[in-house]
View 1: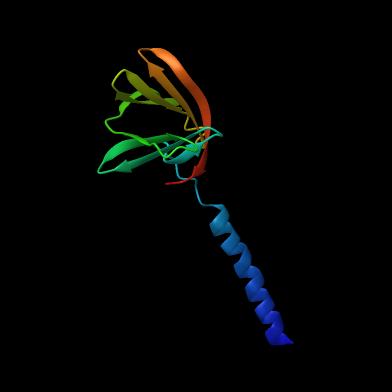
View 2: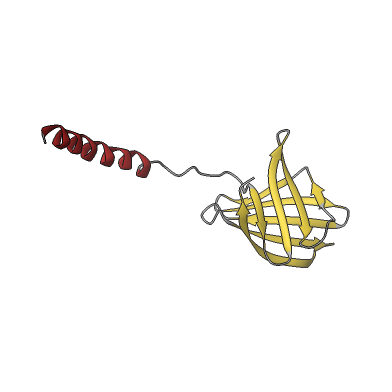
Length: 125
């Protein structure tokens, strides 16, 4: 009986310690949105490659993909804006670090808004 009591005591003391370690982990802050975001019509993947932030977008159901580099940064600490240019088109992502699983995708042609969609993260990287 004594060995069982000792084992139960040891396990009882170690399990809360393990739970404390898991629960006490701080969240890792993101400096920019990374991953794949989508709605029913659009999919955008944002990642870094070769030290640059990169946009890959497509209409869902299409195999045509647009990849853009050379991001322009703007916004505020609570509302980041990322812009890529392709001819007369501007592709803009608005992201709030306080709500990291959503981005707003906006597409402009000569400053006229063509698209404004809220996309939800479906995958990280």
